[in-house]
Amino acid sequence: MAKNHTLVFLMDSQSYFNKLKENPRPVVVDLWAPWCGPCKMVKPVLEKLAQEYSGRVDLWQINADENQDLLRELKVYGIPTLIVYNHGNEVLRQVGAKPASALSKLFESLADGREPSPAGLSNMDRFLRMGAGMAVVALGWGNKSGWFLLLLGGMLMFSAIYDRCPIWKALTHQIKKLGSQV
Image (cartoon, rainbow, N blue to C red; front, side):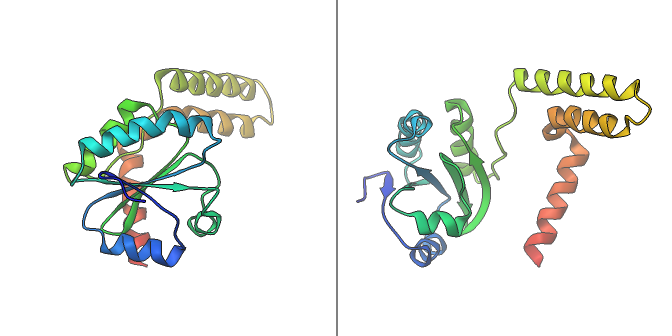
């Protein structure tokens, strides 16, 4: 059933991909379920943004319980999941409830024609990852065969800052370009 700013429907994977290719605007696909608490929290925010950006960004809400074959085809293993498409190509996938500010930035970037960036970590998440990484490095430092712990601690610390690292961004951008050419 179609609303003026949101599309809620049942569809098979062939119809889904055909509809994506035909759609001239960026599409945010919200895969949700009626029993999902985080889905219920995000739903009103998404619908408000869809109304605000009507005609520039489309929101498709797909009930995961009623479209299980499509979820398998899309390799969706958790809900809520947002999949963002531009010109029929997936440009971003986010699993889990995101804050209203991150969703607003997502819709704004799509409406402005910019490629959306994934929602970043909160400062608390960064602090916890960095602290855990430093603790693991400290354990590995005093141990003769602690190279594994040093490596693990380094990876934990890097996970706190990777999304702000320009080298990492450049590498992942090049890898995505190569992947799309194959």
